[in-house]
Length: 174
Ligand SMILES: [Ca+2]
Ligand SMILES: [Ca+2]
Ligand SMILES: [Ca+2]
Ligand SMILES: [Ca+2]
View (spheres, rainbow, N blue to C red):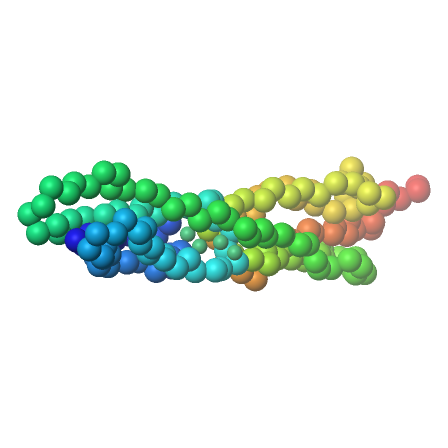
């Protein structure tokens, strides 16, 4: 007798290349035997950070040539457990002369190393060191970086360093 084995997408999808789909693969039980028959579903290894995802495996189209054989459990799920991680690293300007007028931009780059399905946000902030916003040394910059989730993706953060004209602040002594 024979049955046919198929897979179908759950949260794991063939469109996302998570596994190789199987459509109506014939499974044959030899006459007079009860030996278990195996079907292998091939999982695609990737380095993308995902949730653990499931696909469905099912049996259909029993052919027992009219004999009294019925299908019991028809569907099971396979879980693909995520084994990937990603990091965001900050690089960029560390030291620059402030200049003598206007603003000087200090540019920092936040770089994502591995793909992350669905993207994510990272908040950033500037905080006073010996340079302070109270002393108009730089412009406070707080915000959020929205990563699409592509490997090697870079988001820029610009911090403006200020030069206040001393001449404007000077008052004549007499
Ligand atoms: Ca996936
Ligand atoms: Ca995957
Ligand atoms: Ca992996
Ligand atoms: Ca993965």
